[in-house]
Picture 1 (spheres, rainbow, N blue to C red):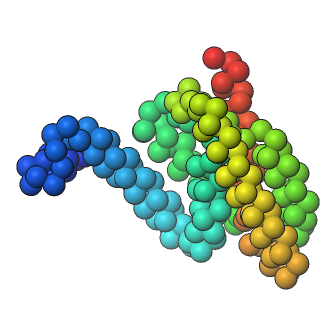
Picture 2: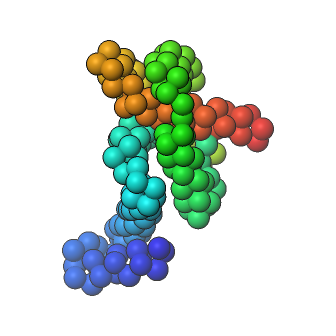
Length: 190
């Protein structure tokens, strides 16, 4: 990924689209974009492979914005991040596929508990992503709004007997809570 981002940023400089001074910023941005694209493509392939693409898309639509603003554990290397993320997606799909209907039908109670805990502890910074005071305030506000919207959506869907989709939203919230708690523990142990 580094060599591809290096090559693309060099092409931008050679074609005079960006200046030499901006090279490193663009190279880093391209590298981040490539990494995110590889993650998303892999997730979608996992969804296709396990015949759970729609469910996985719902999961990701909820999970990604929560993850951005709530923080938590961050892997130290891009490769470790990739494998941990793919493992998390695989387990989420497995849970969606195999959860008993009793759990799905009553997941809204869990959604309230998870949302309350998230609202209390987020944002969780990590050594890879420290936050200053202004960022903490901004991220907390954004995270709380997203969490409340997700909880509201899960509740409305439950009201319309769309328990499975409500369950997927709850699962997304639960995954973020797990990542946030791991982040708290890892930060305290450093």
